[in-house]
Amino acid sequence: MSTRAIASRVGTRATSSRAVRGRRAVDSGRPPPVLRKFAKWASTARVTATTATTDDADDSETFDDAIVSESVDENADEGSWDEDEDEDEPEPELVPYIGGELLKADPPGHKSGYVAIVGRPNAGKSTLMNDLVGTKLSIVTFKPQTTRHRILGIVSEDAYQMVLLDTPGVMVEEFNKLDGIMLKSVRNSMANADVMFYIVDAARDPYGAWEGLAPKKGKRVPTALILNKCDLVGDRERIMELIDYFRAQDGIDDVLPISALNSTGVENVKNWALDRLPLGPTLYPKEAISEHPERFFIAEIIREKIFLQYKQEVPYSTQVWIEAHKERDGAKKDLILAKVYVERQSQIGIIVGQGGAAMKKLSSTAREDIEKFLGRPVFLDIQVKVRDGWRQDEASLEDLGLDDPNRLEQPSI
Image (cartoon, rainbow, N blue to C red; front, side):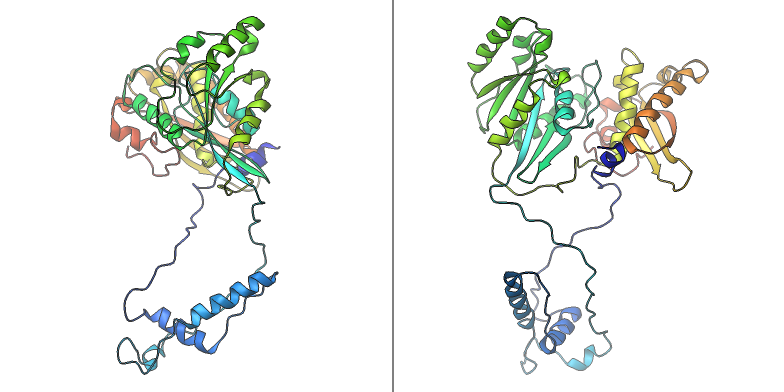
């Protein structure tokens, strides 16, 4: 799949202004002018819908009868109206057929549902989801707690739709309010899951990683434990020992050994989830791979480069906001204006670097991946601003979109 195609399949929530409005019942005795006019018109003109099947034609007749039934007896004393008062209203217009097809119906036995992937930091959750979706949605670094949001990835075929939820790493304790928001995201994903995957690093203290992850009593869904990074263990007996241990744990239905980085065993994970998804309708367009807008993924790419380039506390003290993304036709590059928020004034100098060298490197590496993602050239302008103690401030967390990755409103400062 081309990167252009990937970008086009990302959810368009940020750019679409269309809204779906529901029908409202009219409870008053006197219908509003538009309905009165429509009822009069419908009593003299039959609306016939041209359809491809007999069943659809029957439905059309039923709909026509319902329209005509809205007309009101002109001789009734109460709730009637004078036709003359509506003479100045324009006649309703029939919209001409403009082509197109109805959404394809799901086949019998269609499955759909949410699959949550939960684990400690750096267990390989994001790598696994990227492999299952077939493209990079979640950023991946060697540092823990890279993922801050619940990232949604969609895997669809005619017979099913599996919605994957990549979650932030589960921490032993909360150090700030940002940590609290991330843990809340994990809990919400678990509560909405139809299938649960707990993932542990088989090569680094798997028993300790399991502590605190063990499912508690309550809602019970099909649950498997994924032993990731088995290629780093190198001892088959050790892997079998871990499999036996975790199979004996309460709430675990199966244990799946894999290496997400090498795509070893990932197909088994997919098939295990598909076998246990409930029957259900398509939840998202079949061609979509995520619900998040392009701006979200652009910000995540920049944040990934910050994690890879800078050390110690700086990556964790930054948040990226895309102020503008303007697509430009012809030979002009797309314009992307990004802001990197830091917690202290001294961190601006670290981000910019001596003579702007660090900022130049950040912009260059981020731009390369953004262009691959969008499939077109971009001009990337990054600015750095201070927002004192934003990780501890609830208003700042909301303002910077930490509670909603699809937030569109600009930060207040």
